[in-house]
Image (tube, rainbow, N blue to C red; front, side, top):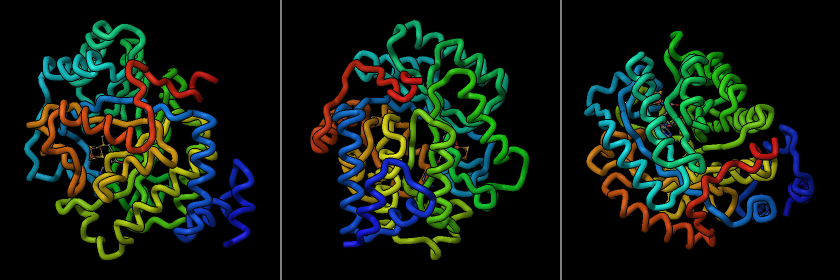
Length: 359
Ligand code: SAM
Ligand code: SF4
């Protein structure tokens, strides 16, 4: 056994070199990393797993990210926008079933009509659920005034993955135009934090051109940003995207999975009291992927509550799970999965990040 891994794991904060060494570990050495992350998790956030009912309310998007199956240029996608009533019904389902919170996620739209419509929906959902319910938005980059307006109307969390913290790599996975500005994305995260949102970010692991050095920088970026929530998943190819052409350069899916677990474990140790999601993409590689993430580091699970008929059109990557299930089916599956991971479903709890509450 490598003694330097043991030495590194005696600390709770890691340098870039330490992180690279931890990411590089063999499967048997990684067990030490996972053990340490489990200990930190148990001591800091316990075995509770918070639920976030995920409503993928629209796949319309003005952007063209090279990795994403619902990018604007993919003409093979049937575009949809749930009606207001469908969105409210989904939110009501989460509230009635004691999920404690929802995530409203969509492609990026910026029209006045969109902004006003989301604003109205937030107000209706807040009125329906009362104060002790988490309303998370994941609707991409918006102006400061829009973020503020939605916050004042009752949204209290925002998820915006930086995707990669390396400017050059960011350019390689996005078109070169002002809609896909790395600077704007970073600025958005700062603005969201200043407004008062609980802010979540994350990256994809295993992107073409991504190195362990990039990932180490990503982890240090999130630490420096002092985030409250983290959503990290493996990058998974989608046939109808430009990055698919580079698939021969990628590491195998199981290696991407293991690397993602290591990243989650390192984040749990370094950012001990944040909320970490067990991302759906983990499950598309390993049937028990989300359970494994919970065992090691994650304390948030996002059952899909999008009406079943729309799900096939929110296909971000190939083999995305939970497409054929209904919200009720996802519910029983969620409870079973969390139990299997020895977690306790935190029904009825909004599940604010401890890190945010301690600010
Ligand atoms: N449009 C918003 C945005 O981009 O921030 C929110 C929705 S977007 C579909 C949510 C996340 O999906 C992105 O942040 C990205 O990390 C992830 N995603 C998209 N394509 C993916 C892929 N091929 N593999 C894994 N994750 C992917
Ligand atoms: Fe649109 Fe988000 Fe997909 Fe980029 S990742 S194309 S912004 S939905």
